[in-house]
Image 1 (tube, rainbow, N blue to C red):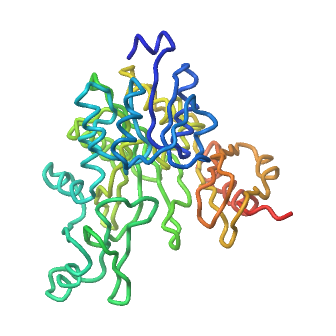
Image 2 (image 1 turned 180 degrees about the vertical axis):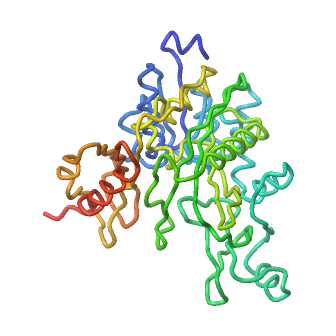
Image 3 (image 1 turned 60 degrees about the horizontal axis):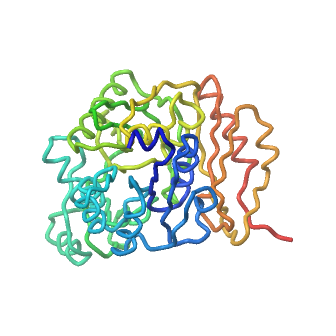
Length: 386
């Protein structure tokens, strides 16, 4: 891989061409890496920046297999990928990072929880169920009780496939699920950690996240997190332990809870660039995207030093807005010092669709948060009305 990289002859395949794929392509272009994108959407974010776009379903065996045969190294920007095709490509010698075995485990939230249990990693208590009828039966028998959190074992993303069930009036999700104890959350924290094939590991400083109660999407991410040095150190130790126990090469985003008693619990992980790492593009020596490239190409990992305090906001489509996108207040927001706007290239908006993000830099999180409130009041994602 190194030889091909040095000769600018490396072909890197990325399964899915959403905003994460687009940002990874943009970073890879700095090293003249040829990038191939597989995505079913002909208007996906990465199409216009990738070297080669291939339209196709990343859940279809033949499509994924044939795509993999065109590249030297393969990675992905989401978990919902045909594992059998990846395993076949791996058996034929294609380098796939992270490894398909890791992806298969992380794809299934039940297997994730069993992994934490097996390795004595702190996580909330859970039980696995085949469908909602078996959950209803467990409720009647007293095996589980309200309130609890139900998560579909596969296919969930951005709050989809997750339900907080407080009483019998709340609808259950149908499908193979895990049911977790409802944690009394004091803080929601994320850590991104990278590991290369030589075993070198580096983690980014922890970030703190706030969520929108209605959409269950991240509302703000600020760095550094408002936690103690002891908590920061424990989160770093856990992130190192998780990626080593997975024997994983690549980038791993880990979401944690700190409960009201101060206990740190692992929520879930994602083996790819993550929304909680967008601020690293503007506020770190090495971005999560650069770090991923370093990890998968067997290069030394980069510094994870903060260069600025920051707040990151997701740019979401406004309620009731459907159609060609219009960014109201764009110029006014740009006039605020330290505001960095990133647009994902999506041509149409709809309510709660991720259309971009804004990172606000300042000397302190407190000042950045004040600016973030101004940005939220000014910058709106709407549908263009002639």
